[in-house]
Image 1 (tube, rainbow, N blue to C red):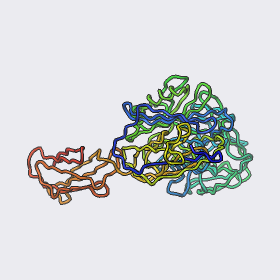
Image 2: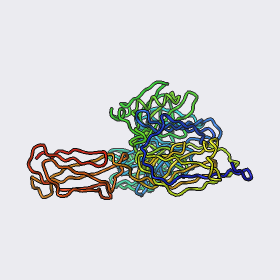
Image 3: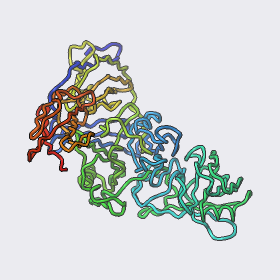
Length: 570
């Protein structure tokens, strides 16, 4: 290997090929790499039965420089933006320069406030969201993790009278409720005038679990949309909640907020520094314990193979973050019992599932380590991030990049690392230290440097060695036909002997295939035309005149796949 002034030079070489071989990873390939001091990545890619891509990050909270932190998307529950306050995991990791991060809590996707975590969330001791019946992951001031179920008893107490219950924190107000808002929610409470609100200046901000004291500085009867500023909370009441505000609070009134949060197994959670919510238990005291009923999940949530994110704690106190990819050709996902067994295999004595499906993401500050099921990451409400000291680098590392490559969805290409001369492969001892990731959602790269095309779009492969990062432009294009969706509908003319055949052709990863050759055979009818190719959206249509013969049907063929569709009943 060429060396110059103790500097290591090497070249990243990729042949610009379009591969047509199908995805076929070796059985049970596993790589173990150090992301930073105290943080290890183990990745397994297999095709034994159902293909699987599994990423496991193990964190030693006792290692020097290691820190765990709950991250709220965009640092605010709601923002006036298309994402409404949600953010991708890779964006969270990137802006905070996290060594690793995963998605965490479930959130009300599709609602007006999707960035509202549906369980307890605490950031650096600051209370952001109240608990639900589901599990939590809590980190104390020493970095020790705990998995538990939490209950809460929130109330406001005045010098006279009974305490009044507070039902929530930083979420939309419901009927007959009193909720609290902080500047973590939005610029204002976003409430209507059908209630009353009081501004309270805290004596010791920010809002924390336990006892908080303050003084009322403003009363807004029959008014909403109160501005939210640092150091204050706003009581927002509707119905009986508004009656409490109007009947008991005045400017200058001293108040005490009792925000008691109790863990079922660990007692008071008041001293927990960072907390995120999750779903249900997977492992309890070293044994499989999939408790979907307590978390409010249906049976199919457990038994169906989905993309999954999970968290666990080992006997010696290490934190284990896991993603299992799914809903794509390279990985089929996992049912919860399988996920529980996986967590036990990682040495976890306690474990819980976090939000999964399209939310499942594991990222570093430089790229995505797993393969999100939608290709492009789903923007989520919050995450758990890992910070640590990266290994010091004494050698300068330079990369050069070959031309852009195109890969068929459902196929793979191996990226070759070469020495500076471009004539010899980089020695395994050095190439094995490269951390591989992606950006842009075109596919997945494993820790051997093999890229798998998944979603038809442009993206990047990211290679990191030491302190140097290089990106390789990569484009995935639609693969060979794997699915045909064919439907016959009544013709718009309403004629009983007329129908319309609609055809859609997709590849193994549901990318639409344009310019695909199609064969249409009609039994008991005559097509208006015989579409020969799909349009740019992978679709084609034709009208059919039925001839009244029994058993009329249509056979649509594209490549090696076909669909047989019966004439709809009258």
